[in-house]
Length: 261
Ligand SMILES: [Fe+2]
Ligand SMILES: [Fe+2]
Image (cartoon, rainbow, N blue to C red; front, side):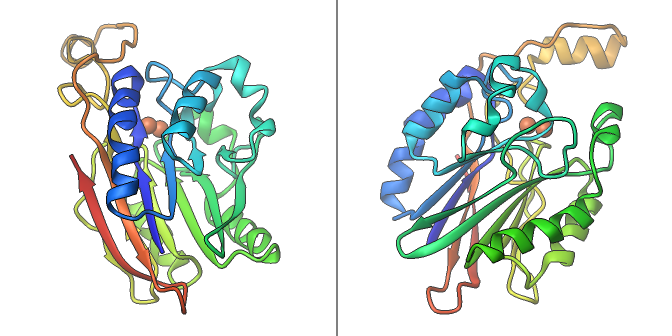
């Protein structure tokens, strides 16, 4: 089977690029299942019903989130209603679905969303359980309902924490992919135990920006040390993600390829 996983969609320009590329790519690469991280799709912060609808209509089977789950209050109170919209499993102060098992093309495919504990900001760090403990109970849950392939979106800042998670879950799951830094890493590989791994799949968002933020605002913050309100860049977007191929007999990952357009 072929899985396409798309990195954090940022703002209007990210959505536009997704709408342009995703249906074509699904068709061209014979994709069976698609996961999109949508945590920045509503002008860089969170996701509303309108972005949910757009991402789904482009062909996403599952949408994952991250630290921006709290921004869109109207949606945040309704996460639980959307079975295919996941919030990190180790978040303790917000209700929503943390995993989903979907039957597609004869296989039971699980997706689990998880957030890191290192450098994720004080608020997140105060309101999560340990990701390394939580993920084991999540894997047990999806396996108990028959999951044959398991994909983990590990939304985290620290490279070391993501690599450690990949090695910890090697042979236990199909793929561990990182999100959140918005910069694609070139370390995609199949680990010794057969799990596909990449530290970060990158973003689908404005290219000429600081991870999606208008560069003038980012520079004001960094150079002058001054407060400047967040504004999503309106520049043209790149499209980042990965394609993972699995063996239909063993369900193990056999190939991981970066997508960077
Ligand atoms: Fe994030
Ligand atoms: Fe993000």
